[in-house]
Length: 416
Image (cartoon, rainbow, N blue to C red):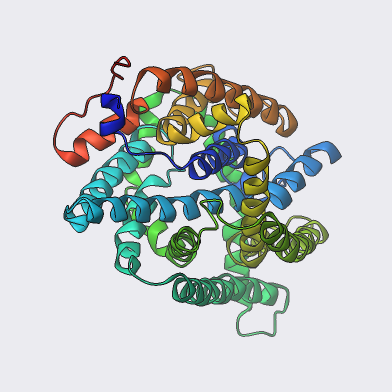
């Protein structure tokens, strides 16, 4: 046996490859947020939606990508968390200590990512929610699924009430006789100020680094608020990941026909529901309040259905191409997903922000996907050769070493 095999546990190729697809797909989700003002992600009316092609690009992202890759990433986080906990318990270690040390350091990485690189961090959210998800580690798969669906439904109802209340209040703005007319008018004025905020963002992110840092320091509560807002979406997804790991779905143990049935059961209704919500936004003229409702609440059920269907289809693809060279590269990108995720933030902010090439707001929506494809190529190029020489990706190694309180061997030993 090679010594590196004693250090690094056996890999589950299905999880690695799914994580590779997810970390590449999440860039297709984030690329607009890297390159344009924040609200442009929610509505093409805010920025980058001047032509029919621009709107088509926004629709492509909203219908096929938005939330689905993040959902898959969240599911895989739950599965990987359970895998690590199970291995710690099998080795006689204190699983709680192992898990919470990992989450503390992940939270630190996330806060550093948020403050020093990019406002769209999800690592702190995962660390916080992961601490809660740990409490469900011994639940059976069926119970996890039932509770996940219940919590997700509760989250959808609460966000629908919250943002739907804004939509209802805004509807009174044009009715002078209504006692809510003034409040509705004020709300409309608040959303009307988004155009001014877009102008301010363009100036900020086309400028030097320090004002961006000051802006994020001034909004230091945002990561914590984000946990409160996203808890009832992210926690159920992690619980589903734990369940789908327990019942063999994510490890490829199901029959091919079962994966096909899952895909056909959930993809058509999820797709139709998402298309209907996109149509409502288009019919409203991409009204900002409608867009926020669609993004934060209405799209949730369709996203969940499509995420599960995507997972089933990708597992069928992994099964079909398990011996191919290209899938080995995707799996390697998944093994180095932490490095690829943070590396993407470094590359994209350097490309688009003013302290780098300064292309913020200057690249159209469709060309952004060409940038995305180029970055995918880089992920696939570097990850496999690196992991042929080293146990872990560079940031995976750092995270693992910090969480264990000692530096782990990084370079592979030659075969004896």
